[in-house]
Length: 112
Length: 115
Image (cartoon, rainbow over all chains, first blue to last red):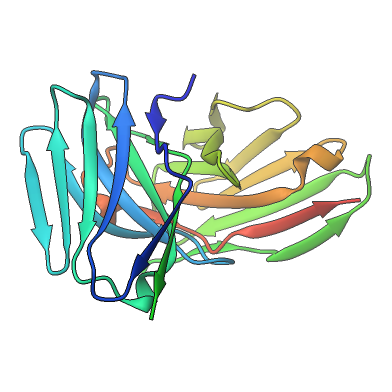
């Protein structure tokens, strides 16, 4: 059973608008969450993260929100740019701290 | 600059062949990981190693084995390749504890096609 789920396999957004990518998790032992961006034929690159003791973290155009009671996090990209088109993975760290569990990914397409 | 290097980017192998995927990291990391990426399934952990000669099964170890004889090198072995192992394989490395997104590093991936 997937402990980290991204229920939207794809998302299409107009350039300049907001992109919202969602992620749900089931394991209460996760204590740190990360978002990765991946282009085809490349490894994932780290985007932004959030600790379970926070509910928001912002870095430029990227903001991650965490709702711990709902076991839900989201990544907001504002404004979206065509270069943001990629697959985005949500990942969660178990509090043992030595590995990550990934979601299935969401393919974001930003149209010019 | 930290590097995780996967020796082969693109491979085509025949069903039943033995396949070796090699990964080398230059950061003296204790942990090394092998994932496979498939559409809709994300990155699934095959095996990880937390020290030389130590290994732990991940979520999908069936059909795979690993070898870690030296700290910097982690090999993924497909003893008898099958078509359902056609996928992108990603190697990663980290220190003992992943403290941020910048403490785990990924290679560029190896595309394996089994025909």
